[in-house]
Length: 505
Image (cartoon, rainbow, N blue to C red; front, side):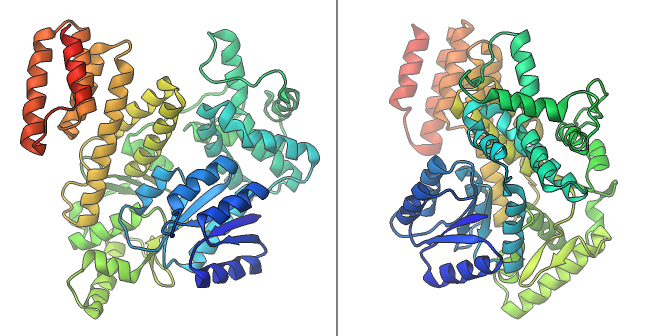
């Protein structure tokens, strides 16, 4: 696997290069974003490790440009300063993962090995040609890319427990990417022209069709096809043995999810936890700090958190030795409350959730759905974007863990509110095209979360005008004027005033 390492810290850059090369990877190191772009123009890289804070072109800008050159690479950003918004910012970048410096080296290598398992490329010439198609899949069918990535992950998980040879494994991974096209092509012949862009006749669709027939025909009994069907079913929350089989619908009911995941955690509208099918009540926790410590580790996405950062986060005013004792005590109490000493793991320099734990976290699903919805919206696929925003609304049952007073939790709470408000704003604008009443409802929801949002006020005025409710347009605008003046000491902007005047015509 070829790795591009971008970091202006020469000592760290040399150390990580040596570490990765000793693991057998090919590493190209760049001291700046500009140098990284030069290297990416000359060579393809499977993995990009990029520092965020660099002089000149920072990591955020560098990643944005690198995605234009090697869009299908796996991106991990590294931050050299403590920030509770680091995981959220990483998602905004559209990267795959993030690491806070100083990071746990075993965890770092584990992440790289995981990428290597998933980026391993076939050796056959025909396979390489198909992988070129995978690289352009997001351009051809961006709406199916997210589903394909989920299926690929599940395929690889099953592959590790099977005895497939390398050729069959490559076919399995390729099938995970191309299989969704089979149902897409069938829908295209039975309905109106799809919103997605179908590859033209000049594309190598004959080879694609051959692969689909080989992997996915009904009744196929090869190990590859069986695993592919299973992975596809799991990605949709069901069980499948082939065409015509029954499936189980997905559900956000904690009781249903508990049967699919060992640990099910909901955070919107209150903190609720189900472990091994049993609810862990608030009374079970011996201290609030133990409870919030476990939630904090859970929201780190499986990353080990250094002891120093945990101490600073939960006991900022305590001497280091006292904070360390309090941390150890809280970990012990959390393990006792969960009745599982292995769920919170002690790593070299910190603590983290056991990496083999199968869990479901609604706030994590919320962020992933927000990112997908934003991508669909940017690509102009408004129907799929609206589906994502609706799914976010169903997940968002209330503010994030409202009873936790800690600063890191408040920061996440505010960020989730902003994201839900943004989704309501975008959704209201989409709905305005054919459902003014529902657009009005979504505009009001957005304003409940952010009362000074001028785009939400503008959409509300348009929705009311579309329903012929001119008197309410006037009342709503005056309400907007008063709100902006009271909360921000501002007057409505020119764009909003123009919308208001247009709605009165």
